[in-house]
Picture 1 (cartoon, rainbow, N blue to C red):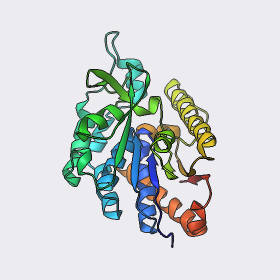
Picture 2 (picture 1 turned 60 degrees about the horizontal axis):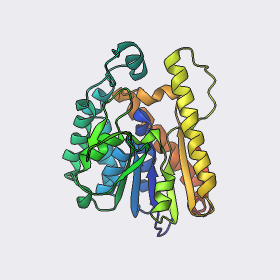
Picture 3 (picture 1 turned 45 degrees about the vertical axis):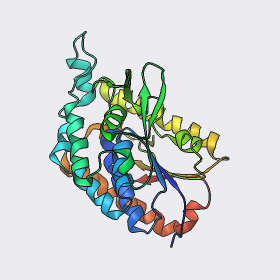
Length: 291
């Protein structure tokens, strides 16, 4: 149906919204979309991307689904993250939760895939983090996966920074939440991106400071992606899929909620692929998926 392609898949960040990314990935493979030739990921997109780069197939996506429904995933956010940051930090603290929470999730994923280094992956993976010392993206492509994934998913204020080669790193979403530029810079001629911060319309106005922060962050990161897309679309064919979730979905890690989000994203993506077929990938475009 979709024929051979040489696409780089770009997976954006978004905390617990990564469950929607899993649903989109499942629908892509179920519909026969060609597996990626390389993967670029930021934050939760890097974690999801490591599983897809390990097993670029429906089987790899189903492994990833098991990771998202695991106890380790539920434990990542034990409380409302923004509330924790705002009410629980002492003056001498820079992180609210232990790194162990996210480390256990990464180890769970690696236990399923059996892969712990970039070199073992079946397709190349680029993991984007933020180099705090240099104030710019840091891209990891070789060596142990764990430090790179810990760095890319180290949400500021929530998890501690990660020291790699004497430099401190935080979540890649700070500087490049949907890393289209990274993919283009390494020569990608065709990109399929899954961007998680789609700033769609919301009937409910934020009623608390954490909700307001979540909404403004969503809009800021989404418009960053739109600006990058407009700048790069003449150089590379870019198709962006944006599953629309509520701003508060960023930290909702209850198993039942995650399962619903994955299924809703799968159904919405399957419907788009069924309707558009291979035409979807003939031209650059941004497609919003209402879950």
